[in-house]
Image 1 (cartoon, rainbow, N blue to C red):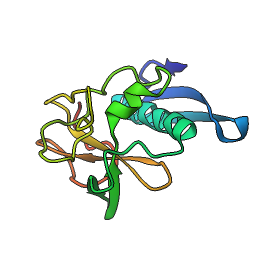
Image 2: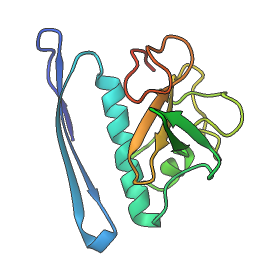
Image 3: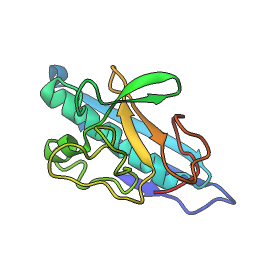
Length: 159
């Protein structure tokens, strides 16, 4: 459930609740966040959706949803694995229904989120979504218009 409040001055407040049932011990994880983000709503929402899908995937497979061990990207000085968005579309119980518009395409080799099977990234996308060894989701901005490259977070360009 997501509630988007009207802009408050130059800021938008997003209140989101994401509930993901996990296989681990039959428990449930509840993620509750309140964000004050000036103009960063699409990025933050997409990041939360990808993170929730990763948690669901990990809980059901015991694995990280990566392309392969050699598909990596450097983010904030850390080498992270590129997320296989195609895997998340196949096995997330409908949590991630389509490839996020932000997923960059055509970077060559196995270094974009749609190098898996049966899905396509958008040529107008600017982000490669990556994952650390603990399942934390990060992003790197690619292409023109990015405030910074190889830095995690919203880089001022969308999608």
